[in-house]
Amino acid sequence: MVIKILGTGCPRCKKLEEQVKKIIKENNITAEVIKVTELNEMIEYGIMATPGLVINEKLKSSGVLPKDEQILNWIKEEMK
Image (cartoon, rainbow, N blue to C red; front, top):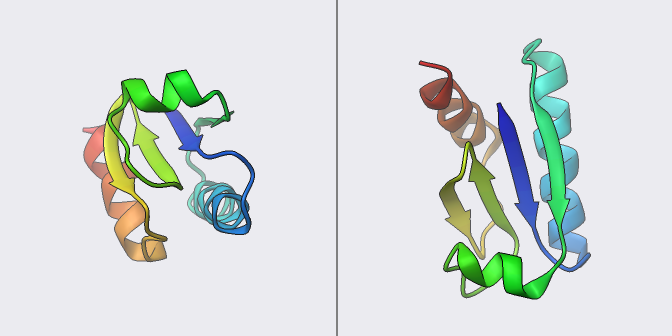
């Protein structure tokens, strides 16, 4: 599983990265977390605001900090 955090390094982008890493650690999920800071690559996912969350190349959120439960649900969906 590959999880991408899309953002230029703003505080909300860093918070989302911390959230995701905490969730995968607490739930013993094997995933690679990649920080995407390149604007052109972010645009390819069609986001209009950061932070963006991409799981297995599917955009899950943009411009918001999702709740931990929502992130975990998205991860579980992609594990099926």
